[in-house]
Length: 420
Ligand SMILES: [Zn+2]
Image 1 (cartoon, rainbow, N blue to C red):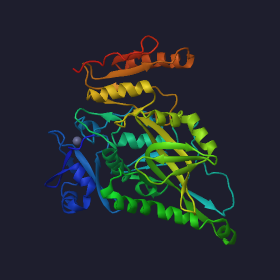
Image 2: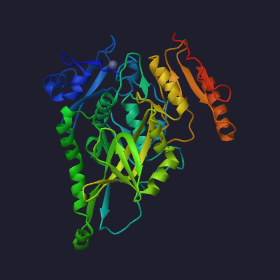
Image 3: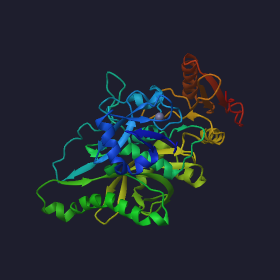
Image 4: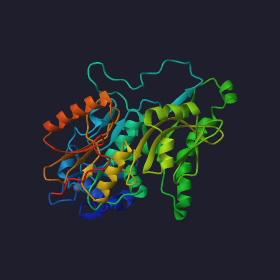
């Protein structure tokens, strides 16, 4: 991502980074711009594309103008590929609502609060359902939400000259969550994005953790068995989400202990839950031991009255060290080679769709406008081979160049296509 994006608000030229950190410092310029031209501008190219100025939870933010993401420089934070390049299109308006002011609301297939002491009733259709008439989804899984946050924060893209580590990535994720709403709660309040730890910031980090975790833990204190027995009304426990990088998953007799990087508080999980997650996302415990790239988790947590959190469900995504999402060790090799060569590329994300056709990577700096990059590798899998043929047909129609690493022919990665 770029740390050099400059924006113009009123007559002030400001670095986007500074504005996102301390928007209140620019309140005067924001008011002036809102009352005169009505928008801000991005200074990434000579056309100075428009930016929305909006306010949420008492804080100003700027966002890309709807449907004008392609007008920005490809290295700009507000640049967006035209739609159709990811599983995002499989969501209905009900699952994901994007508003003109850059804000959005997502409907998760899990409740963010639990009612105890209430008469039991069937779940209110909050499960992931696929519309019978179309293929659009009415709610998102945690993985779908994780992919959305990644794409909105431009973390599935790379542009020459960009830098990226967890500190920078988190800043972009926070800028995205500040515009989001989930189950009627602001996403920044419902989700804790683990900060990069430093001794200097230790106190501030502790404060932000307490601000997020204490209200949830308090909601659990009202729901001890004794209190529920004496209570005639419904007690509500608030669950919460945490987004971070898994450091270790330790098996004990009673369950698993999940430790996150830069985060002092472990998450407890039942044996059966981890086994279920490994069936869905692959063996992440092994992936972490191999120490290749990162294992990102978006975890839904249940607070307990004794002051700890346990895992309810999770979305898990593997990435390279530069936080580019990958789906296999071979993709990791390609992502690292592209990153090392500082190429302009993106990684299309699947979200919750399982039957859609997307390239493994897309390169934008080759002779033709696009080069589709594909890794073929599973020998003797008929379903996979059929899908591969189907994919090739889609690419031919897309008039893109094709780069293929066929593992049935060579274990060595072919050279990357040259830059135009
Ligand atoms: Zn721009």
